Length: 590
Ligand code: SF4
Image (cartoon, rainbow, N blue to C red):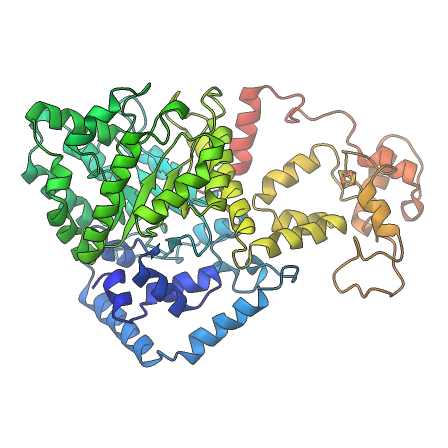
């Protein structure tokens, strides 16, 4: 029984409970969204068990069935539902303090910080599989819950291999990827895919046609090979497949007027097959057979947009919309077969057309989650396409996209390395969270509010703890000032408006947690004892005589500044040196 079939039967699965916990909503809400087809939980049963490509053990199956049966008996579900309903109500007040990641059970939250992720990833017992180092930690994709991001990795025939790709997976997980696609087209594809699944707690997607043409020309691809490879990858534990079944022979003539033709690898390969054989797209012809295989393992469809526009000029053209109509038909066929389905969307769209794209997809594909590739909002900044696409992704998230496929600075110019994976993930976490705030997703703005309070209070440790990537923020702060003073290097003491606001007695701004308006305001506590000693030691080294208990603001300003910049300071280090230092500081995950 797939998640979709369970939901339609009113059953709450353990995976739905887990998704609900991570999203601050109730399990019954998740079940209803899955049944409606507006939310998918990509969870291949083999990846859920962590069975390393084999069938889950009888014991694992027995335990899961027992869990489902217990949940059924609790369907009124006082224990689970009421706890999460309380969380819901706590999060509805726009300015309530305490974002979900701050709770003692922060591990449940889907938007954990890099540090929280590091703790879990470094714990060998966390999500340990039956036979593999890791198993899937279920998550949901849909526009009624927080926006998700996907990272693409994969060896190419030119460079990389299994070890490097597993390392990229770890970087992607550390920096917030909610799912990951293995798009390998070179090296040992089977070995690499299995290694990625076995080391991943997030859903893994693939494009099976890439494996279908290894060792053969696309023209020689036959139906039997297609079904065998789909089944093989499902058996390995892949959670979702991109299948380009929407590219139809009768619509190919619409491509002729485009500037960039077909930019989807899958779309272009299948177009060549159709034109060579003068036959319909084999993925379309075999769609129901593929669905039957996917249902068996509960693999989710990600219906590929093989005709997606590859530049602004081609966006929203007749070819794109013709394919979308076919994807709408296939969405219904997949659901009838009991298979969960999301739909992939365009990668280059002018800013003012993005919201329209979201609305058209929702209407044609009956609200199936929309998984968009960026989109880039301009084509003339290669080298910075994580930024050009992040702008489009933010607007897409605001307008209802459910998942954003990241773009790295290497887009259009080369194969991403680990550092590019980080850059892409961070850019897309920003886009997703900005979209969540705009859509009033439970818990989203509370995170920002907690940061703003810490910032106004000049509470540096708390700011770096709350920050998504606190280690980078701390490193930048410490470049100039290595103690947590009542100002930072940006404006300095006298010009620090945060400090001045904090010292205005009758304002709440900048006061510490627990401040009661009307109570006598305290000035900032200033330096800790440890920091006073540090500055006094530094003064002594300079031959200055200062009293650590009575440092003047002038002395603090002079001594807190490090003076000469260290070799790794971003003003001083060249690119090679900076990357070396960053890699040393940030790798963390081994
Ligand atoms: S010095 Fe300027 S940038 Fe730094 S905390 Fe104060 S107001 Fe903000």
